[in-house]
Length: 232
Image (tube, rainbow, N blue to C red):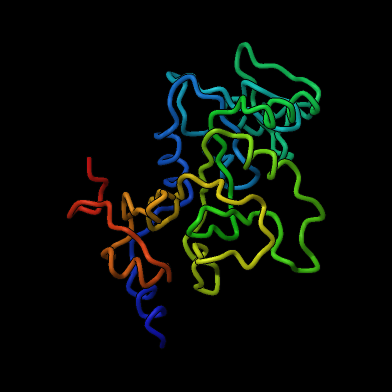
């Protein structure tokens, strides 16, 4: 068993995808215009809460979405860019996807939350293609979101199914956009991408900073207190 495998084997606590979505939702400020990327990031919508005003956007031409509908309330004409059924809050609207992309490219989104295959220490993002022959055929709106949103959050598992870190020194997969990622939420930690390097703000797994750094395989900066939470 390798050292990395030993570290992985001793982890008994990590965030579930639902808990990751709750953590991201907590950090989105009221009044923000937010795009939730295809896949796991769409779960964030279910944890915003009716008492908060966060305007959710989808690149297929919908704004003002709510949480996912119950099965009995699904509307065939109301889906997001990932073809998932969504709800529309009062004041929400449909519009042409060209206008939706103009909103993305014009810098009118405050945040986007994207999944990723890899994020580099410089904040480069790879999230649409691994180079495999059976990969999805097009990038969709990922590039537009990555360069158009004011803040780019990535939500992903820390490791691949093979136990390899998704946070890397340099992306080996095709790069969606360079230097675009501001913050990384994983099942093990919350990490900010800064000019000084990758700063660990919170650790969720039952491992310390040193073991997290070994598991990640790149240099990290400890921005946590003794409880593994963010220093004020």
